[in-house]
Each structure stands twice: as structure tokens, then as C-alpha cells.
Length: 174
Image (cartoon, rainbow, N blue to C red; front, side, top):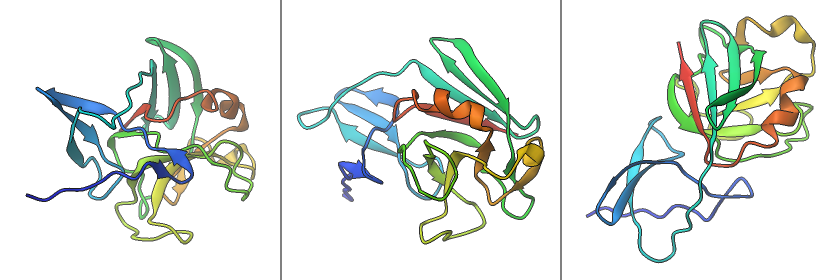
């Protein structure tokens, strides 16, 4: 039987993955790996920490909008830029994998997601992880499909993004 181990840290952050199903002493979780939306089963015995989040993030590619909800209530919505035709933002359910400061002017935080580019195997020295991040080069990109797959957000979204816990589910729709 194949086995795997989730690292205790991803990108310098503790690893938190959302539970999407359960069966007895096992839970199925979203994995931060290819193919996108992969899941795996984890035994709920010792060594597993549990937490909860009442945050959710929704991204509409068609509307070029992102909203963050807490406790079922929308706490913010913003125009965004999404992936260009040849480097699309992948759709589906994913999660906030980490919160980092890349030092590249994208604002703090950059929220790498547990999903990857469907058209690139590598980007910027990494595995083409898709993320939510600020965009310092003006607001003209918002409302357009122009990125390499990441979701570019206005600076006004960053303070709310800082409060989003790791493991928060992100739903990206067409």
C-alpha cells in the first residue's frame, strides 16, 4: 500500500489542510500537490493537530472579483486580475497553503494556494504554485485576465488577507 507524509511546514508555515470527508478514524484532506484538487486520507490518531476556520475565499474568473467571508458574512470584495488565456487560473476548490513576504513588491501577505498552474511546470524557481497577491504596478490590470495564473488583488485587500488562517478553503469558479 502506498504511503506518504505531509511535511510539518510548507514555505516556512505550519501545514494546515482542509478536511473534505471522513470515514471512521480517517479523514480525507486536500493536498498541496499535482494534480490539482488531489486528496489523501489521514488517520486521526496521534500526531494530528486540529483547528477550525470560519473564513472562506471566493474568486470569480468571469466577474474578476474576489470576496472574503467570515462566519458566512462577506467582509470584503475586490476587483482582481486573473490568468491570461495561455496561463489560466485553475478553477476548483483549493486552500491557503502559506502566508509569506516574497520581497518582490507583491505586498504582504502573498497567499500561496494548494493548486498549480495547469500550463506551466515551473515559475520563478518554484513549482508554478498559484497564489493571491497584491499588485504594485497600478490598478489598470484589475478586471482583466493578464497574469501568469495568480490572482492579483488591490492593496486594499491585503489587510483582510492577513487575517485569513492557513487551511482556509478557496473556491475559484469560471
